Image (cartoon, rainbow, N blue to C red; front, side, top):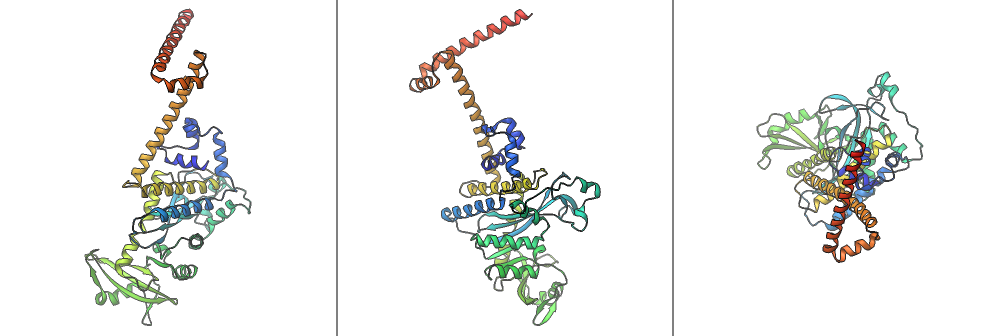
Length: 437
């Protein structure tokens, strides 16, 4: 069933289980659509394990067959995205803050751990989260009454996924990183935006990876004090003190930069301040790699944007977040299948000549449509052959054998028989019409 659900993601248009069952694509849904709904809701299915298996197989396939040289070092990428929903009855739903619109919208926050090997990015793991716990999830009393409360067995995988809704995203991110390391994903850096740039988080990354993974992300311009030569300074104070004396120009990226090696809460970090040559405001990267230079840090951090592309492609092509089912298991299944589909298509895209994943998606959709059409044509041919075999009183397999051996003469005879049959049927219908009149 999983293969069929993946193929459905590749078909053009809004192909839900109901619509595909109604259209009878590929004759895949002979067992009925309810079987697919039960499969998605099944509490015993460990969707995290399924995604991990696909991710590991993708990694093994690339390592064995890829000859392209990586552009950058391998790294993990951490980011979240909004999955907007419309139904108040959806289990675990809440109002979550959208940084793009600056509004609280109904839905989930999806936290994804990606892996980039220097060429392409794949999703290793994810978790769904809700917000506004202190404020009844952002829902009023009327909305809370509609809220679905499912019954889950603590022994099943779905119970653990439901518990993740209320785990802090930083805690969930560290758990995902642990699992990725156990699955032999090897990287030198973890990239993230400023939301994740806390000293506690950086320290945990170093501890979990046994100091093999460094953190690299955008720093926060808050009041945290970084000790430089024994003196604690905020990022703004560091800019005022060192920017004029230490700044250098980089012609390649048309910007100015300077470094500041410091310590915060006994954790050594390196701050890399950057601004455009004609700009006024300084921004900065923070990393636990004390030896990294500006160009390497700048190029590495650009890789972080590939996970934003992954989100866009999954939502645009593979229907990520479109599921409006009430059962939480179906929400987890929907996200998993979308990420698996993206992984499989990315693998094909990597070893083909397509310039973009979108172009490959269009081509795959066209091929699947042609396969569907050809399947229907074949069904029609079989029905015609059965009708002809009855008409000429000959077994269908014997008829097909003679067609293959001597196709031209036999086909002409068959076409003549069909014409005669059609004429006789039309005469019968005309006579019946006259009689009725």
